[in-house]
Image (cartoon, rainbow, N blue to C red; front, top):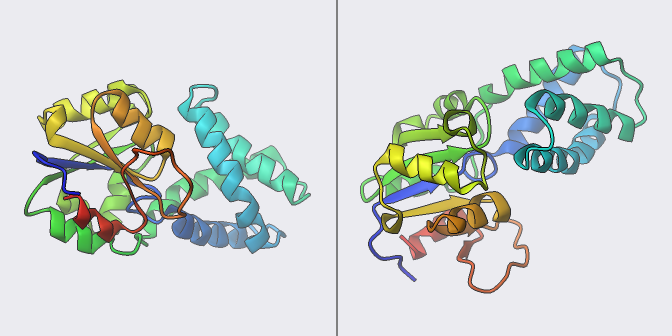
Length: 227
């Protein structure tokens, strides 16, 4: 069903356009080998994924700060694989991780094609709680599609706080009825946008159960059904 009156599409970046899990795995392979950390890397990455999501939620909800996020998600993963490591090396690893992560450029399937499809018809924008989004956009060669990039540091609020969406709409000079948010997180992206009166489409790549009435896609190219 086509959404009427839309002039702008706001995208989340990590896990929506930019393939965070693939790029993160490549980053871990590089830094763990560099520092000769003796863990089973595939097992480490598998355990890290849900731990990282847990700490991101805590960060998003304001329960921990950025430094705690970066340290604790690594410490808990090393504990889970029963690998003894000192705090100094953990801090070095997360610093290397943050520096190296945006240099990888894998995108979700269909990302460039859908941006090519949308860009002649709509203004395109990014709203993210992530970091180093400019580097990620440039290295993956999609930065030129976006007129504005709003992150939580710019806005002073994190998704799902309605105020970050209000901020992004103001920066983009878009009225709520004319915009739509697309993102992979039902809480941060979809419910956050809806809470401020902005339409939203859930990028439900893993085909999770969602409550009735939520617009969703399982592949980015399915946005053509709405826009």
